[in-house]
Length: 222
Length: 167
Image (cartoon, rainbow over all chains, first blue to last red; front, side, top):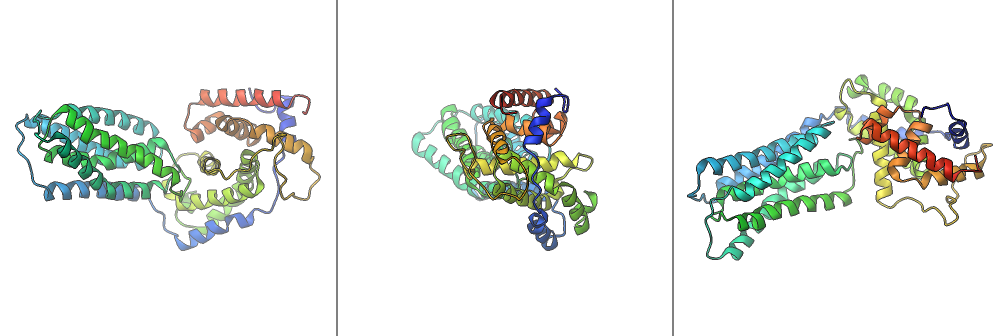
């Protein structure tokens, strides 16, 4: 199937010729923008903004909250924390970097690994009030995600809507709360971790996807 | 593009002179709406200016520009700003440019194009009307070249079917 070898294709092009209006005015807004902002904004500035907010939010909360002693294996505990930290940092870069479609795919596979690690990487310690403590964890995670997800949505509005990019940015930004809970929550059962740490994480990513649909797009560039 | 990325207004004017009318024509063909095509062409070039720092050096410029235009058209359609095709398949009347074009035939072809699924329509318009290669369309759509070929071929066959007796 090549162009120009088919009479139907020729008829099709003739039937729908390109309109020839004066298009010069269509560049006015772009010219005004160029005059107002002659300096180029490199992609890494948005990535740095997202990365900075994610890291500062997680670091601030880690220092502010009371640390807990865990009877679990330190290697496992800090291994899971390291995985979550990688998601939180690398995700911000991968989500924003132009032309990183395949990298985003690899990153999302990494998020699945992080989800499994966050669910099964606990120390098994139970709580006497599992539901109330659990609600506390979920609320803390959501509160910590307000600044990170707010900035993620702001940055995402500068890009054409893309589910892969939105999921990557959302997963990275919401990982700040999961990391803080992982190091500060005294409960380590699989049920608690799955329902009150990881489920809110995934729900927040879904929320970002929904909210991004209604946020106006400032630039349609990929 | 390099001079444009350095903020040179003249370089932008040169890019617009080269691609402005073509992008506007593409948006008209893909939306079937002249007013929307004007708005989306403006948004496309505004996005180009705002996001020029994201253009990857060494990459082809035309697919990138058409990717921006395609994203703008998709967003317009997703937000429900598009005009509905009437029950008889004809598109609503719009401001007509003074020319000797066959408006009846144009509307029939435009309606047939508008009825194609979005991904198919983009592949058909980009390849058959705008003359982009399958590899360039694959870059724009973010899918493989073979997927684009399938979309373009199926869309083309659908058009041939729906315009049987017309063209």
